[in-house]
Length: 193
Image (cartoon, rainbow, N blue to C red; front, side):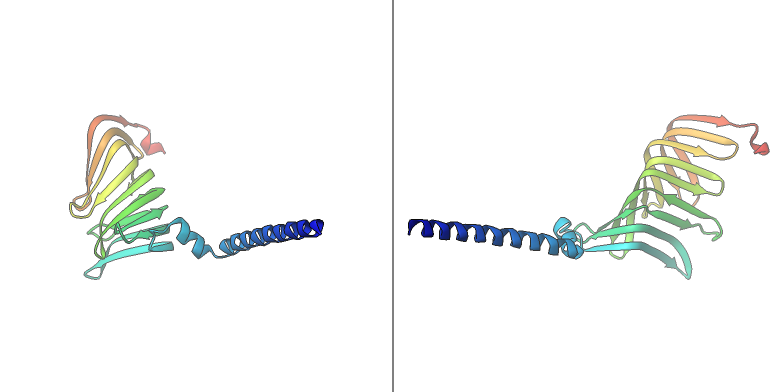
């Protein structure tokens, strides 16, 4: 009789353990099958996650700027959008010469429905006509209509290479200013290339 009780207790223990394991496995599998639930668990502060993000500002029937990105995450509490592989295009007042800015990641700060500032990081490049500017980080401030970079900057064209530390680009008047440690290299063979 003692053996029977011991067997029952062991059988109940084994069945309880198997039931617990089955429950854990089924909840793990269902979590993997529900990516929205997993994303909500991992990123509780994200209000929206957007693939192929695009935002455009049009004024008086003319496109002023356009932002595109492979992926965006909107953080409602901070009123910010984090973007992956962002590309920002400013359409200058003449309408024919776009200024393109790209990076590997970015942060857009919103002011209501408008963008207040954009900070790009990771191999940032700015292209205007034949000039290409490269830096590690750049910030666009809408109120001042200014692109700034605190770090090392390289500006290249076919005939010129300028290196400096820190930079400001006034977008409207299209003025570039390097703030310090400026070195210039002029290539005489540019016409041949």
